[in-house]
Image (cartoon, rainbow, N blue to C red; front, side, top):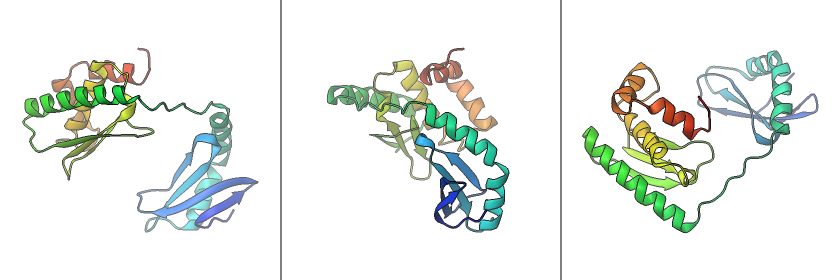
Length: 184
């Protein structure tokens, strides 16, 4: 198996290879069964990426079939009045929790996102919340606000982050389960 940056065909299957800053070789099976491989600039060669992909090929094919069999998610844009209500709720919760946590100068915005409820850029002190939060409960939205603001102090999801979340929102795990549609 030989890989190059760009489009490749492996055993009749299209594989997209991208070189970028990354810590490791990453294989993703995206919606529709598209296979994407990320290869780090400095930490791996294309030959190593090809060897890694070959070692995982059975998993890739099984996962690809499972992903292709799933219906495509329906992303519903919130109506303007839903977006306005969400902006009001998020703005109030964001301000309230910034005040509680002693955080100042933290900007926020709403944006369409496909796979995340929110993103915190702690260096720029900016939090972006997903428009797909429209229609979620206040408790679930509050969880997202507290989660993202906690990243200002704990940048990853390690023990410090979890301890801060436990202190700030003791039932955060339950709220997260409900938000993600999981039953306990």
